[in-house]
Length: 125
Image (cartoon, rainbow, N blue to C red):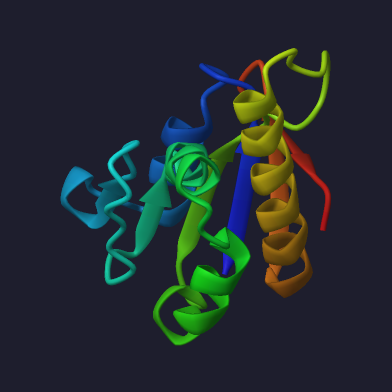
């Protein structure tokens, strides 16, 4: 699995499309509704799924662990929301923590971790 992280609107999806020859049909975009389809080659906006998990007391890391065989050869893309100013609200702090824990787990499992900043690739692993 290849993990791509970076701030919002930094070019993560375009980078992934070019590097891995992904078509729009191969990309599942997570939403805050909790729906996630691990069968796609690329999971995009994982932070939206973690927001659902934080709001509903779901262990996002546990969910990903239980579906590892489905995503272990894919591309996972997540906004970096776990750095910078700590949110004041309890719910948003929980979201930040959930996303950070999931990305820490995924980065450990990943073959490569890439950070995209201003459209530029930074290899972390």
